[in-house]
Length: 185
Image (cartoon, rainbow, N blue to C red; front, top):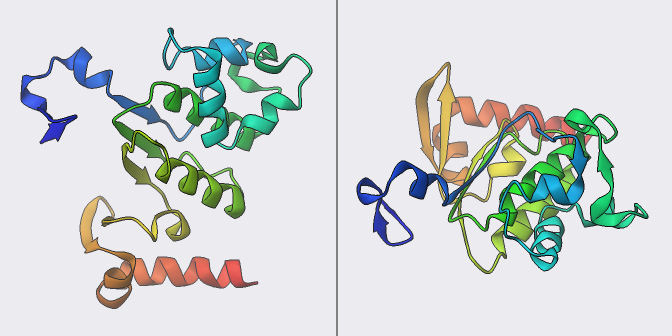
């Protein structure tokens, strides 16, 4: 397997980790400013890079709506923000790194469908084109993926595109239809 054209077996653990941006399901923000939280992604990032990441993560308006901007204070755990705001800022922190691999572990679960769609489109249009792994229970978040792996009780029960899985994987089809019915209401 290659990352950035290099065989992962030749990379040190630190070198490999530096190329990965991971966003956990539970958004983790720290007491400090927005800027300080984002700089955990890359301590050398300038304000332009921070704004670029905020824009892609659909978090720019969160920061622009505060008079302090990037210097807005975040309470421990982001308690002074909504769940969706915390998730978007956590995604922005990962994007500040400009990772070659971006792992989103159900990290858009608190986002409405429109924001989730805008986020996926923004990530797809990033000029550095990271490889993106999305772990999600929402088929709308993954339906345009190149490859979807369906797990049922920890076992792979289907692999393919949305269309292929709708035709061949009863578990995927059932999940999608149960969500589609909710979305249609």
